[in-house]
Length: 161
Length: 127
Image 1: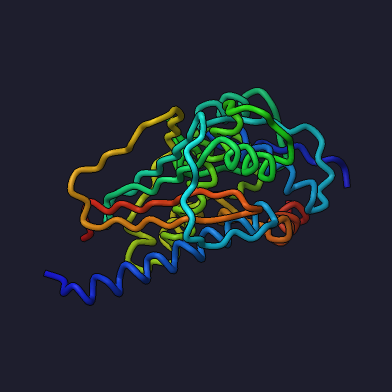
Image 2 (image 1 turned 135 degrees about the horizontal axis):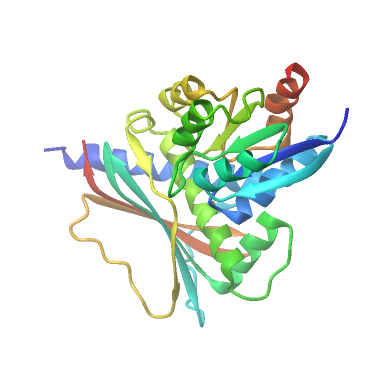
């Protein structure tokens, strides 16, 4: 059994890697900074969640959760084309951002790089919903801000080999 | 240099457009750009059309990028065309598997147009 202090250190390391991964994706693909914040995204008329599964040495999911406003802006900066509604392009763009964040985070975990695979993105939209995971081994949730837009990234680990 | 025709294989239509934009920003004189959302579609296109460059993701439904590469070789499609993988999977093992399957280059997502330029232009010069 992992001592509580060691687990705390591990989770802090995971959070730092996640912060670095988010900044890398936003800088390289969208040309903007995206930094951790203490504020969580507000509920909007429609919310969007992109989910990437992880399997192998680590089983779990990486979830990007955002309101419509932030999602539209993410898609616009990623694609270079303005958009006014949560259409397939926006869902695709948010899925790809989550995919790249999960991949960039995994690259920073030496024990996972070769032995943990990523799924293709699944994207959920709607209001007043929750993604439920039974008995995660650990959960890391971070909030981020770019251009005053907020979103969350959550890493849920079910098992770690 | 004559215009380069390219095939971009990725299940994300957004990523296909981003890759095309990165190729143009890298200074490539792009002509026709074909798109496929998985390896099966890509093989179908290559049976009918000739391209000068292929860029492919690895994680795709129906047929992933590594199987696509193996099928390219087995079916002798596009034998002299350089293939570059563009993917979030970045371990040495993934790179080795891609090269063993027939890829000439590997770019990790997220990427810059400079990285695209550095990895792809030399391949086109050699081809």
